[in-house]
Length: 395
Figure 1: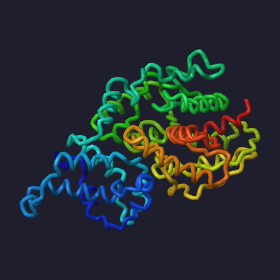
Figure 2: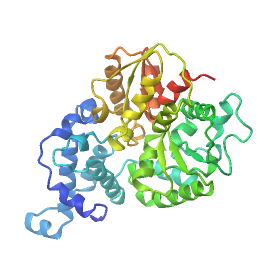
Figure 3: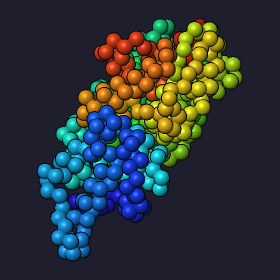
């Protein structure tokens, strides 16, 4: 056990915390579980205790000891029950980069052998199959077979102008596979020369950072960069905000990257996506990684407003203050009940707008909210921005 999982600036930032409780008030896990030990404030206190217990000077002067194994396991149980939504960081009055701190803390706990056993499953799956679900990676592009009139090459080409990086969730979950199908049909209609990478696409690395397994990331990043370069693409598209954020923050910028909502906005502006009238009232849920993370707020809203007949209403909490859906940070794998309760609160807020459908720009948000809606028979449609545009597409 050591402090090497934290940067110097992170260690200094711990002392900047003013105990204002702003992070407690906006935390979706705290609100859903009514448990203040899930808050950032409690977490920072726990980090300080661990670090002081490791310091020879503190141990000598203040009789400090490292937390025992039971206490460390209990603390770990609170740390991993977090969606990494970043709302705590958004409201922190002194600007502590809390989301990055939580990722470093998870890595520390993994190195300290104090972590939920599901983390071992995530690690094993990624090592064996290059995806977090332990699915056959050769089947990453099999969703193409569910398309009408899919081309013989299945969109897997040797060369193309654009690479569409599908992501693990959309590649393997039937519910989420509707998103890449919709995007592929839109790109076809718009005449975009694009390719999938098929089995050459590996996990972007986000589940590794969220699980405290940062050491695994380098090999996956290098593989994905080489696979994109091999195809000579001038741009990489992501419908998954987490994949987009990983490439934006952790990959060297060897090719321009863009989220699908931004790419769709550009196609709509150029008149390359013919849209028909849709009589719907919709609201928009800002995905945490796309909104608070990448600050992409306007593109999806512009696309929604471009569709004739669609009435758009905002959520009470929107843009950088948008409430998490409960699907991030590997929370579903760690505490499915807490994830579902966060989703319930999200859906209640959506229903308060009177919308027929909630639109988002994230396959995980779609999966989390749709799962709750179906299980509880809530009369609400949940659609990704690509699905909404496909619904309005003239073909």
